[in-house]
Image 1: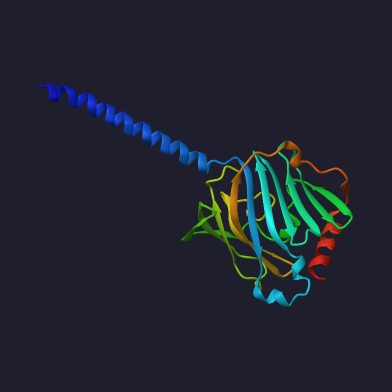
Image 2: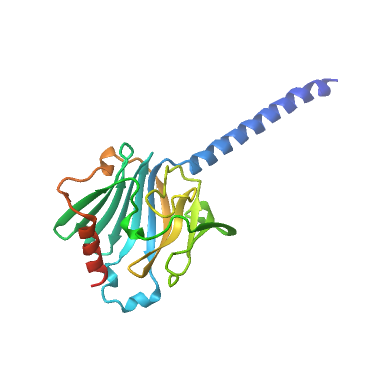
Length: 237
């Protein structure tokens, strides 16, 4: 009889222990997936035939996205830091900013919330389809696939892998990929007939000071046409 009396409390304690362990695992998993402030580092690669371009060493080789709540700052850098191209989205405003630092010039342009980043000019937001094939794990996050069909029939379809395991709000705003329900961790851009392949190398959970999402001192207002002209001059030699 003593054994029977002990059985029920013992089973109850065991069930409580298992439940507690399950809660701890769930919380840890949610914390890993629910990063709401941090930095994503992307490597940028290009088709092999670009090696014949004498100015290819000036093309950006890395993109970083700093994010906190709805604040975002995307920075493209070249190997020699000759220029930085940046896009800033601020939480409290509807517009976004394009910034360019090249040699002695420091320029910025505000754009309204309906505009598209100039890297995607002419692209349609309706050309996205989703696929259950070829899911991937990128930088430790589970990703699903989407396929973008360019309006230009001479361009190939662009493959995109995105994750909903990072808590970044409106991750693809002001791009043709706004309808994709997650942050893109591997994707392609076609600009100036060049395919940029971006793939996340690491995701860092870290805090950012509020001023990182402000326009730095010393930047002068200009037009998007001037910024694009300067970028084209670098890429085309």
